[in-house]
Length: 520
Image: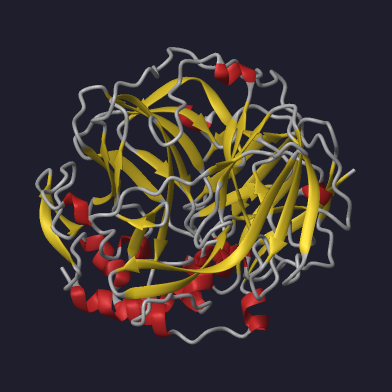
C-alpha cells in the first residue's frame, strides 16, 4: 500500500484504509473528534409559493488547518433539501451570486423544456432566473445542480447541488420512516481530491475527458467520514451519488441487509433485499436498514470494476459514514408492499430512437494509463505504490486541454454536442422505445434523459434487476452493452428550450457526450 493519511485495519480479513484509525462499524473513544453528519435543512415554498435559492461563494474546512473555497446554495457548500408535494405549483427563484455563468437543472423533475434548467437557461452573475415548477409526479428523491455547458463538472465539484424531494398522499400512507435527520437520513456521497493548499483539484485533461473525475477522498453531505446519531429502529437512507464520475458499491460493515424501497423516480412495488447496492453517478436509491438492535455500523463502499476508480483508498472496502441508532425508538416500519407501478405494455412500441455514446479520444486517454501499469495492477488485485504514483501524476499534472479539444473529445451518435443544433424530435404523450448503447470504448456511461421518468426494459439483453425495474431517469451501460427504455414525454420542449440526453459522468457531458432534442 502507498503511504496514506489513513491507517490500515482489518475488515472481514481484508486490509482497509480508515480515517484516523477508526474501525469500520465501531465508534472510537475519541468519537467527539469526528464530524457529525450534516443534515441539509429542509425548505418549503413560502406563502406565495416561492422557493428562493441563491448560488453563492463560500469557504469550508474539510480538513484540519485548511480552508477550501467552495460554492453552495443558500450556504457555503451544497444546498438545502427542497420539499414539495404532488399537485403544487411552485415558483423557483434562482439567484446567481457566484462570479461565473450557471443554470439550475431540476434532475428528475418532469417539466416543460423551458423550466428544465438545461444549458439554454443561463443565469449570468448577479442575475436571477424565475420559473414555475408544476409538480405532477409520484413521491421521489430528486436533486438539482447546474447544467451550464461546458463547465457543469467544475460547478458541481465546487459544491453546487442539493436534494429536491417530492411527497404525495400515497407515500404518506405507508409506515416508512419520515422524521428528517432522525430516522429519514439523506446521504449525498461525493469524491474529491485536494491540492496541497487545501483547494479542490479540478483539471479537464485527457484523463478526465476519458475517465471522469477521480478523487481520493470520500465526503458524505460535505463531511469526511462523519457519524450520524439516529433513532433506534428502521432507518431510511436517501442516497444520492452526487459524484461527477465515481460509482459506489455500498454495503454494511456488519453484513446486515439493505432493503431498497425506491429508485430515481419513486417507490418500488415492494422492497428488494440486497447485501450490496451499486450506484452510478447521478443515481438515487432509498434504502431501509434495520437499526432496531441499536448497534453501530458503517456504510461502506466496496471496490468497483473501473480500474482507475480502484486507486487507494478505494482499492479496499472504505467506510463512508458511521450510523449509531442509539436514540429514542422510531416508529417507522418496512412495509411488505409499497406502490402499484403501471404494467408494461404487452406489445412494445417500435424502436424510435437510438443513442450511441461516442468516445473519439478514448485510446489517447487510456494508453498512458496502460503504460503506467494501471491495467496490470488491476488484474493482479494488488496495489503497487509505484503504479499508483504514476497514475496520480497523469491525473493531476496531465496538461489541461484547450476548450476546442475538450468539446470535441466525446459525442452522441458520432457527433459532439452543439448548442445550436437540434439532434432529433421526440413525440409527445406517446410511449416510445429507445435503445442506448456505446461504441467500441466499453466504458461506463450512466445515461440521463431530461423531461421524463422512464422504465428500463432490458440491460445487456436481460431484464433489469428488481431494484432497477421502477421509475428511473438514469440507465447505465458498460462493457459494450446496451439498454432499452420505455419513455414518455408529457410536456413540450421547443428547439429554443430543448431537453438533453447525456452521459452523467459530468466530464463526458462537458466534452461533448450530450444530445439535445425537442418534443413536439
